[in-house]
Image (cartoon, rainbow, N blue to C red; front, side):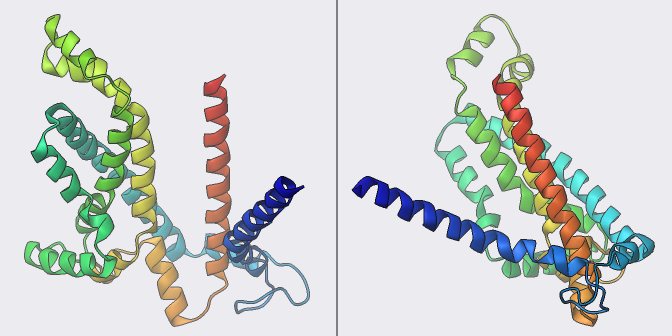
Length: 261
């Protein structure tokens, strides 16, 4: 009886925490279907007018496309750089590589406002303010820690003696990396690339600091919509992002189960 009581207590607590996390997200779904011109629950009937407004507004579509292609470029750049860094530190495995790893995760520890202020001052000097290149560079620096951590975790399962054996059998450093290390690091690279895309797609503080008019990402467009007027189209965008996230999560889980079989 005592064990059963503890189980009920912890299960109830778990469901309460889950509801606390999900309900504020799910509430945007009925808001996105409102028949009013302001954010609120539907009054008389459900309406798709704000979804139609999103797809008919070139500003929303342009901001969405900008976030997507910048996120993809950042994912590629951060994955390449983060993987190279992680493999180099894994091969060295000394005190210097450990210090370098700690330095690389600094962007996770520093408050976003401080990072953005640093980007702004440095980007002004380089002439990268309000440019796509400036946004890509900033997002790549922010995403690098996530890639390197993911690749480090993947390489933790690789026995160091295996690359040593490949080298002793005559394989060059590049052949060893390509044939032995990269396959072991691939799961971490994929995971890190996904995280890098998400970091870039969702980032808003840095974009507000280093862009003005020429670059408009989806988070910036949402922010501007909140500042100018509370447009229900924002709820429509949020709903689509939530649904895409759920679909992507389901696909990843399904592929993981299929791979386990």
